[in-house]
Length: 222
Image 1: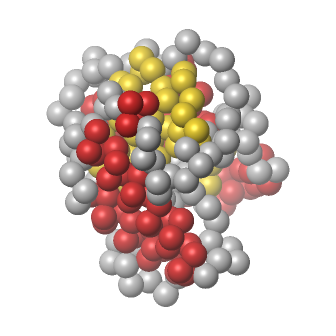
Image 2 (image 1 turned 30 degrees about the vertical axis):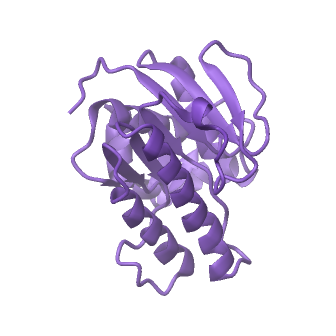
Image 3 (image 1 turned 180 degrees about the horizontal axis):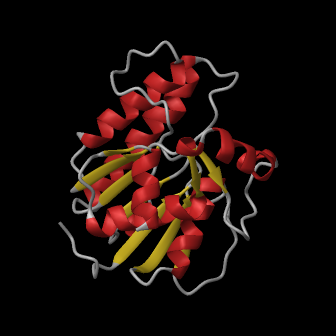
């Protein structure tokens, strides 16, 4: 298992969304993270000595970017879409097919990489749930653990409190954080806890491949 002194070169997808942006902000401040590559469909727009950007219009077709994607030892895959209003076929194409195609490219270039996939609380590892998104994400999680990375972890956060300074946040997150904190505290994390847990899992490892909210909060607060 890597020790605390391991330096990380991290690829982050989904920085134009809340989780990816929150993970990015923690990486910028963390001494273990030496450099960050933001892989997005559209520019995030940041100037920082640690950060470069790589625009890939279709993550399922990352050909032509081998040079940019090589030389990294961690990936925080935070890109994703809501299943609301989507057919299972369309949601599978985006959530499963695209994620696996991108992961296969990364593992071919960086076989010693740790891959962290953000799914969500309620994801079903049996792939038999009556809830469509839960079984599709469960299938994605299972495939990623078999793909050949040095380590692969599936993060299942619940409701998250945004980090101060985040821009890519839906309006209701700030409104509902404190009521939910009182009603269902076991389902709540701060975005800082999630980001730090990703960094620590990549640098130090974790005993299980699936991290539920309690695991995320414990790791991100230690």
